[in-house]
Image (cartoon, rainbow over all chains, first blue to last red; front, side, top):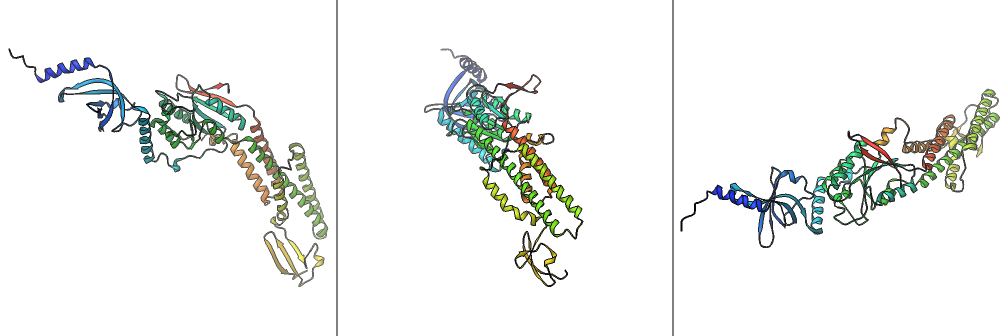
Length: 396
Length: 81
């Protein structure tokens, strides 16, 4: 038998390459990752294996940026791509276009891995958390344009604090491209600026449904946000990466609405209390000043220009009238509810006069209303707002 | 922050409420001259009125944030239902 014409190594390799690459222009392979390496160039190199065989794989850097998770040795993955032959080394490999983890257990692993990595970076630190404004007036909401989430939240807002402006940025909240859209929505609201905080909301769903909220894209966007972010994803039991990075986690979307705005009934009560306190304080000051002037008129009438005092008296009366006019038009006093405050005001009354620099003079326990009652060398007690002193009269 | 930006013009709800608290405290402490007290009182009543009005506003406003072709933000009214 005549010898076959030998191939050159290059020629045979070329033939193998052609036949393999033509045979498998597109394929999907399930396997376990091993020997996973990210080269400094950004390309990923790894081996896919099962119990009986293995095959090399490569993922070029341009594809790596689309990865939804961080691959680790031992993970079961599905890859898609094509078969390619690397002539220089005479090897074949899968040129991987996409890779995704297989099964819930693997998602859990990806979750734990990202959580660990971001925690190590300090993204979950309490010191990073921004305070929410106490009385937000404009609220940015990121959620699905379809579904009940927005509707349920509106219901709570309307009940608690109806005068709000809600700025809704619809976003895709599950499936391919959702994480990118959510991240873009957070960036948009930050650029738009004119909201006091952001609520990131999604209704309940499976681990796969909630997955976008476990992606690094979203976590980074939340961390970058200058506006406080409240996460409200899924049900009470669902914790996502977004929850850990957010400034506040609400168990559900409606819980988020409850958390960020106060109940207007409580605020209305605070307002009524304020009006009542202001009124009581001022009314008691005016009445005390009036009494004081009357007292001065009696005791100092001979030593001071009486007109000046009368003018004071008239002025006080005018202030009193101005106030009752305001009262007549502006108040309904809700006294029963505000009894506690009333008592506080009453307790304040005697102190007010003394605090303004007046003092009470007593001789033998009785208030001295006139110098006529005093003789040289008398001992008197003077009461100030902060205590009493004893004093001797030297010049009458 | 948005709340801060508005403070040049109309005070925010939060700013009004804080000022009201301040006024009530000043009046309670009793060391303000009487004329000033009346002025504070008037201001306080005015603020409480503004805040009460804000709270009584029955309409919730829902706006949708979008972008036009040039990438500028647009706000469209949505029926809050």
